[in-house]
Length: 389
Ligand code: C5P
Image (cartoon, rainbow, N blue to C red):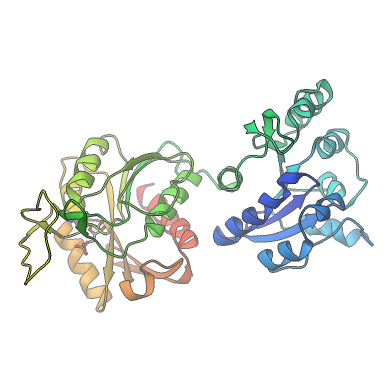
């Protein structure tokens, strides 16, 4: 069962395929997104990746093929899902047939939660009529199947059967497990820093990593919303499933937002938009020597512009402050006329994976204790869903 959002327990089963190495990254991604991961490995899997690696990444002992008592079946109790990645052709056959010949297949047979299989095998195994039959059977039984992909395989052949990439697997699983509280809603989210040109090779920017904005976009997606993400340059991969609009300067961000805001139910401005840009950026590289004076002029305030539209979406701002959080946040809410504003202390949040936020809405202030941004984003999305329902 999914407990509090962001703290669900996932059982990750690993079977013996060369793609088993990708399971290490998968654990890391689930842990990063606030999940507890319990790893179960078949005998064959331990020949491809060590239990020690998986134990270190999951922070829990790994369960191996030998099982001593029925207590192991209890592993799946309280879990949101069992995910088997990679799932070999042999393992898929076992599930289709209802075998309970080792710990992992027993867990799958005796489960009371969702089961996700991520096939990974040679293309001829994938195309074999026996595998086709088994696959049709497990789909009919309600098992979720993620992938496979087409491409070059470990055996050197090219075709269908490559295991899906870890970020796609994590997104598919978490998205399928999240309650669809925003189904039918359209979100527009800004994220990251902006770049303001000084000359062709120099910019004014800030330390925003984009982590919070991307987490908000992901949490909205997981809750069933359609999401457009307008982002300044970051090192992050866009969440799978968003319409992604990359921009650089504040003015580009403003134009992208205004071009996409029509029909949005919610606008979340997480981007750290540069308040000023260089008035006359040089068209050639500025030579060094002496003092350099830059004249700055104000950028458009995107949030304020969206909030003052005739029929604005529900607008949520973010305010990173270095002190007087509540006072500054309330002033900003008033000035920009937004019904909800998330405050955080910049020094505690910028660039980090964790933060501590306060959600201000008319009259109320909800403090969320320090946690992963992914978890805070899921909680914020719940607040937004409540506010617009
Ligand atoms: O005024 P301040 O920058 O502190 O406000 C932060 C909020 O306003 C954020 O939601 C940010 O995305 C938005 N903002 C904006 N355009 C600007 C400056 C800030 O949309 N030029």
